Image (cartoon, rainbow, N blue to C red; front, side):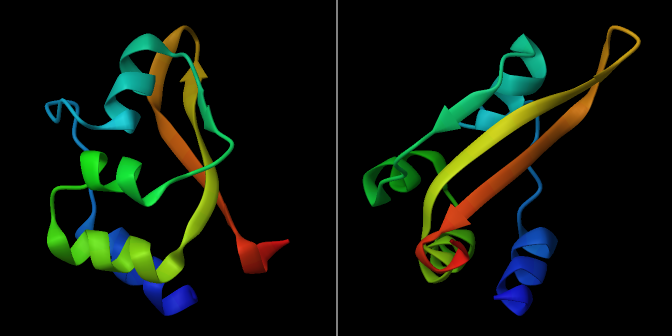
Length: 88
């Protein structure tokens, strides 16, 4: 799955201007998001780029969380962690 993740990293760069971006919402609010059960329908609503959508389908995350990275009272960015059926 490493090649898929590397390709996803090259193709998908969330921006604060994207109203559908969970990363942007977490960066703005500094509130983490935990999705215990990730559904394909949710991915359809969040991912606009068909190539990124195909990569996510291939990775098949079953859950994910997005957490803010905060230091000194300033949000530096976000980190996304996901689990798949095969990751344990």
